[in-house]
Image (cartoon, rainbow, N blue to C red; front, side, top):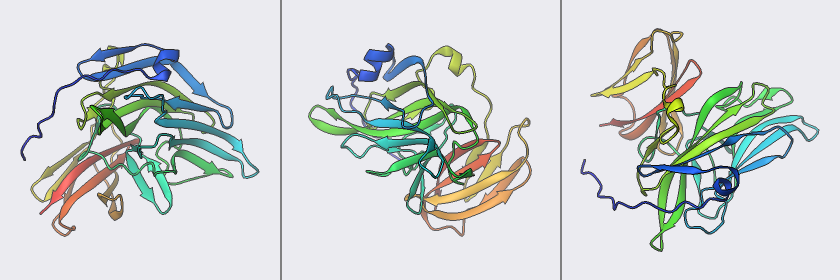
Length: 286
């Protein structure tokens, strides 16, 4: 595959959230913003994750906490697109609901690496959600998460042209789903260029990288390997690029070989869920 020629540029960052809550540091072309850990624990309390690339003052994403909301006792955390550029979150959609992926430190965020179905236009992304103590089964952040990442795809103005950029936000979700803590975030200032979850963050976060499950395509087989400290087994899902589930299977053991020959030809996404992690990988069936 020919490498796409990308014009090198560093964009100015003037986000409202950065100005009010903390400073940022440029590391290469990744613009990183550290903020005091900000916890939302009241019903309807929200936090604007604001990447204002074109200095327009338009908020791109909003995270909202729900606590015993309405007579149905709804608890959970949702994210929505506040801007006008159809911003998206890495994830999947089932029926009429969108579910952001819980990404792990080091996961790649960009076209060809993630499916961006976790947030629909004028819709909500259900990070964690329960009604009358019944949790939505596809909410990746349900049950509590520490240092989970959201993968973001958003639009910004560059030389009077709307371009696509990628970023991440790191957060914790309480086990009872009644609070969320936003920690920091970053974006790749080079348009159309991917970023990895945690990239650009302080050294302390990078030192926390642990060995993760591996997904590797070799020819027409997909190989899964789990680290020794993992509990053996997990679930593998195959999705098309629209986020539709094509196949699903549970497996046991630390290694698993999955044949790809009988899947639809083209580009698909393999999603591995194991040990509280969810990893995804683009696969090509030919």
